[in-house]
Image (cartoon, rainbow, N blue to C red; front, side, top):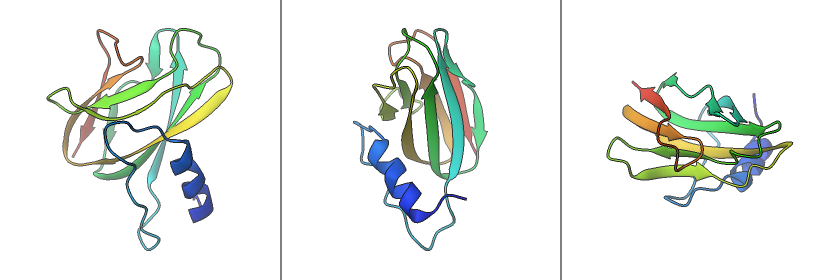
Length: 120
């Protein structure tokens, strides 16, 4: 389990241009943390089935020089959150509140295809 200090640290690493990171309620259960690896081919994994709530995507780049970002879009294609500048050998976090529905994952953001997040 992540402590509140660790969550605050993760929130500081996130880069969400569409909306601010959710405010973390100290009385709420800790958010789900999902590891994502960036590769030259995109995100791994790229498809997710999750429960509604706050999710921390811990995005790691072990060596890709082609892909340095992860973007989440709603079903209409609007950006819900992203993390950019994930350089080789680094991990950055994207903290996002997901409601029931389907979301698209793009790694990088201009990828023609990507993955799906199903929240239910």
